[in-house]
Length: 119
Image (cartoon, rainbow, N blue to C red; front, side):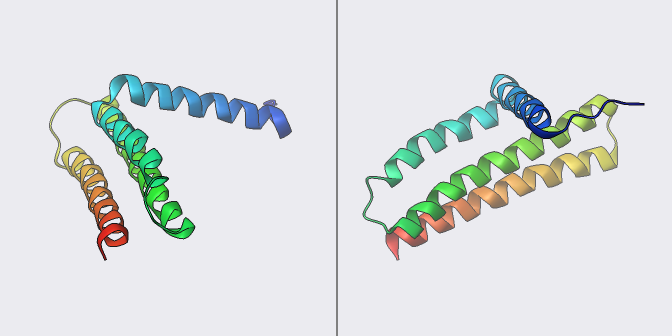
């Protein structure tokens, strides 16, 4: 019988794995580092802008959304690369769709920030 983690032990283990994932993304994914840098500039900047609390929350949420989608994209790419490095239509499609998700999130980030700041 497998011993299952429950309660605080499970939460701690999940947090350790999550931290490990963030460290891996920072170490191996240049796009993640670039987007993290953008977030590290944009989030503090949002506190100096004349916006409402709700607008500031939306601006910060968009920064986190970009990072989240980049993590998911990097995970898809890692799994596809693990399965095989040979070119395959479905592998290429999976990677392209992950990249498209990041691009659409970046466009949404720009729309939200522009909409709050300029309209």
